[in-house]
Image 1 (spheres, helix red, strand yellow):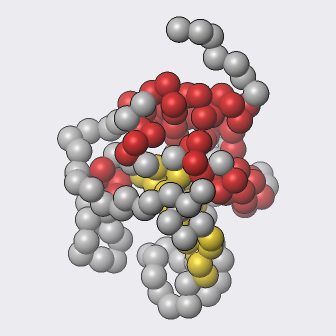
Image 2 (cartoon, helix red, strand yellow):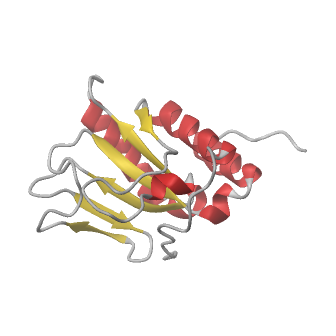
Length: 157
């Protein structure tokens, strides 16, 4: 199923608790580290607002981690394969040459950038992930998605 891409839909006044849970799960599953989530700012090297300001984006890094890139690629694979259940709308991978790559839910595939498109590429040791506002509006859905991937059956409420 190909989903829509929301992009920037307005800044929020603070962190989203559901995104904090999403991030904590991503860290636990992958071993990557949260390099930053909610902050109101412009996109790096551009004048348009960053999705970080919406509280729906996170940068997950692998600098200094043993087999960091391998762990990152495993997380990327997991996120793409389970984009619907995890609400993933966009993944930017800054490492590949010549200019990084991006995966978007509305096209359902990767695009290798042929010109400078994302600041920090090539060679950046992190990925940027954007999550759907619909998923983040439902704490139960956030937890259920990650729990299903771990094979955990949540208690009945």
